[in-house]
Figure (tube, rainbow, N blue to C red):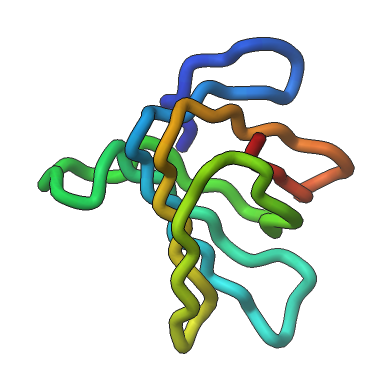
Length: 90
C-alpha cells in the first residue's frame, strides 16, 4: 500500500509533519516502514513499505523504540528508494 504522491522514479513526497514508524526485524534484512500524515491525526497510514530506512537527511526528531524507531519530520521531505528495499529521507 503506497498512497504517497510520486516526485520521480522511486521517489515520493512526504507531508511536512509525517511520522515514519520503522519496525526492524532481527531475523530479516527487510523491516516495515509505516508512514502517517501526522502523529496527531487519527488517520490510517498513508503507506506501508517493506524495507529498511538507511538514513535521514531532513530535519526530524528520531526516537528509538523497542522494535525500531519513529522519525518525526519537521519539514517537507522526500522518501527515496536507492537499492532494492533501502530507503532514505531527504
